[in-house]
Image (cartoon, rainbow over all chains, first blue to last red; front, side, top):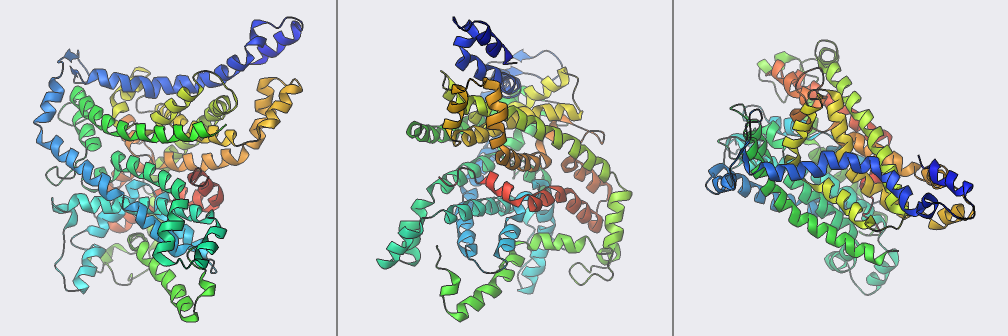
Length: 310
Length: 282
């Protein structure tokens, strides 16, 4: 497709044609077109359409009816929305535990004994498995009649727990399941980061008498900054995207206590009792706005890096 | 190296560390080990309440045989492959091009376009759900593998572009300048100079996208419905409904569903980790 600039450049060697003069603009444009078209139609336009849809009442089949801000007003008094929002907050905070936990495991495994490579990959294992399977595995792990958790609790003479059946515990049970693969991911980020830590600085610090916590805090962690940034990005996004685990483990129950915005939106928009697309879109917009705050921060950090580069 | 290399510490701590490793690993993978044990038990163990004792007989072949030959599982696995492989090819091909354009050329709006791809990649799925479902319905692709593939390609292009553009940025720019001085056409520079250098990035990205798409559940539920198009992540729920309370079969089914990305990971480990940790080290 970019044969054209080449051909025209040859034909008019003395006075370069339009294509040849603008080659540095036209070539990237041609290369970008397919990707941008796909992205516009499947990502950018849908975001705008969802914003628009949140001002309508629509069952997905008939005419959409313009209702202004009514969907958003309804959200303010919707108990289930409040629960979802609150649960999203819990997810956000507790999911961040994956970062120190991942660092801890990475420090534990950052040795060179025989077979350590295999250990590292086996520790990373949970991240590769689909969240659906992680959800199933943990559902059985928590099962009140035969689950491994209660078998262990029994051994210690403790009362059995019905984690996923208890509205006060269920969300934490799901978050714990989510932390399992997420910690593995953070671990691998930190293992790579630890590999790149400057050995001379460590030696210098050792000579100055730094060790243990002080070494970790003042010498190692500052050098792990890029790894921490990525771990932070993927963990925040992961927390706000949580859907699979909830859908598999509790389907929002018991009594709607484990809903988060992403799940509640899905439930409203495609529920068995008729589609409420407009209301669902309003929930999605709220989730999007929360996410946007983080996206803006990530982009800003990346922009700072770009300015420093070529 | 931090922490201090274990070889330099006392003999007793070395022994402790060596024995701690397998214990820690077993604890870490405990829920998974439990499922693996379930999957080789006979169903009588579950009716008689022998959940955690030794399996009374080894039924691994029987259980997995049932999953492969007496259930819809192979059909779902096939769907997953037919969704995942075209997506990987499509997304990698598109992002090689976008990454090249954004990584090599200086033009107005370059950074804005790049940030558009990144931002789009972070967007919550739910804000896309209703419009993408409508678009797929309008195209007559609802409940088809093609519908799912097209969306996945589009969405993954965001992440892939980020990845490729940064990789190309790190290539020696002098190579491209030298080619230009020689009068090599731009598309030839892409094909003969840049693309061969991108092989490691293409490998890393392919493994990564394979895993992401194989493990997708949300879009499978939103855009497909039945056995003719649903991938294995969605299929496992109907499989489980079919074998309700047959824990030995459900466990075997889950392991089969989880296996392909795991195999991919162990075969292509270096590429996989290189992909995941891109940017974790500067």
